[in-house]
Length: 372
Image (tube, rainbow, N blue to C red; front, side):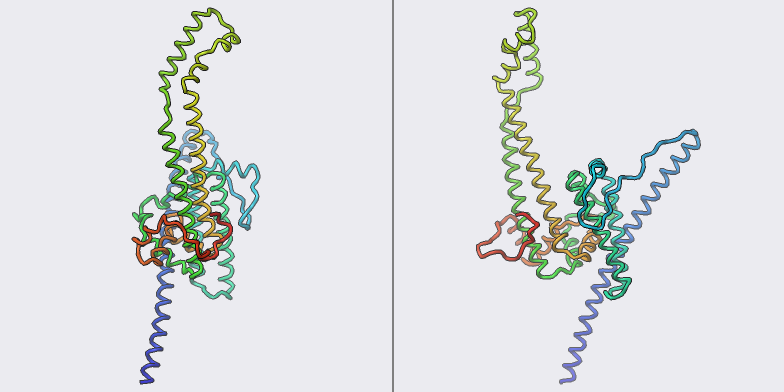
């Protein structure tokens, strides 16, 4: 009986090891699939560029004229640190960089990280020189990716939103960004600790609370806009012309100074409420712009805090590569953790906009870089 028990324990131990190896192989296989998909995409882009080059070369030979082409895309600073001070020229380069260039750089970042992850998975010994060199290369690529996202988010928010919303393979894979089972797989590949999960869930609650406030303010702004009585532009223009002609006929030749003293049509239109309407519209427009900025800030702080203060370098790289062909959706990852904790998507939806219970003190320590 004792021998059977020992054999059972040994078999259980072997089974556990085999499961761990199987999960590691699945993770590596998934990364390899992403790398292959990225290489196919890279080859397709190179082929397209070659076709364009051939056409341009053919044109040059036929016409015998020189074509003045733009240089390479403006480069972002390549410092190894997470934050660098930009010069005026670099700031202008980021502000004028097209969204396609930002997305192209992100594709290249995913491809580089995928290749490095394959090397790290193939050499898991941390004391091995090859593993250490791969980790150093991984951190360098992650630093550059962080700078790209930070500078774009601050200096050109629209480009950052386009990157987040883009599908890097142009939709050829047919996968959906809203597929929660897929994001659950991405979350599982990160191998998060219990403390990391708790912090991410707390940040998710803060993010939802902020977004709920943003949406309430936006509804109020839109309601104010609907209440503003904006006069028809053509009717107002016709009224101005008629009043001007009337004043000219009565007064004859009137000097500008005399016209200002004789209550011109524009001043009477102010009494009619047009300027008041314009002021209301301008006020609502300013409020709406501020509201959109707050939405962008809430999202960027949520993503930035998770990546900068919770994920380790390997988890950052896995999140980026495994999320392909999408930008890492931190909210979907956090929602997958919430589903795991609550035991079902229905419970998560019910708690989505519930206020955070802090009566008994904070549940976990939330990183101070995230502002609630």
